[in-house]
Image 1 (tube, helix red, strand yellow):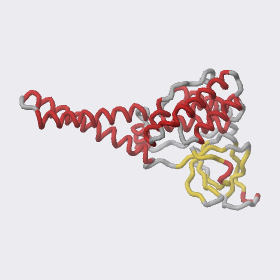
Image 2: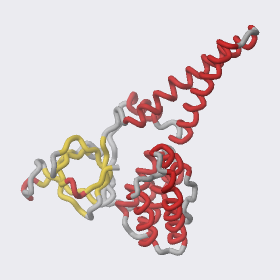
Image 3: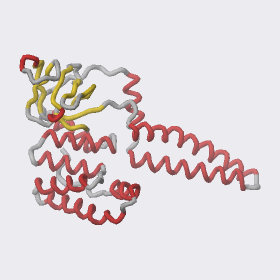
Image 4: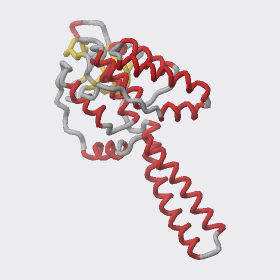
Length: 259
């Protein structure tokens, strides 16, 4: 499990700050993040968690921040929150090997060992396509595509030589393909189209009921800390969850947190 040293890359914090126009807060948030890393290395995991959570409370997040937070929660013995944090890290950087490895090993510690039902192949392909590239790389490629498209159009309009116009044509076509394919990927990911709401159980044991009511006679089965669930619908106090093996039932919304 890759929980030995915290990651120190902070590129997503920079991007988030620039996007919301609050670059003056960068120094303070970055300093808290660094303090969290130092506290983690000093094995003061509770204080490291507090520092990382303070950065999140300030409205800033990154893949590395969620990843480090997951490591700190795991070291502190909070299995559910460590899984939640690593899942959130993967939302920002799908396919990250360390986060995936940590989740696989942590999953072996979860009480509920659930055998997932086979997934329809078309949904698997769509999920693979959406998560094909890390978010940061995807943003960079889409931006490069727009720059290439602008440059190609400029060459087509202003160039006098046929060779330059030809280069402009190819640049426009290639860049347009990048923008359409990867831009659509980015749009789908950012807007969450087709993604189901998922959560992680944070309490040690939770009774799953056949209806949204505090009645032990309605109990169907139990789920335990760290179990990942799909949320089909919810009310103010209750959520209908679906497990990977197809089991369905209701739990109080306060027993879990959304990924």
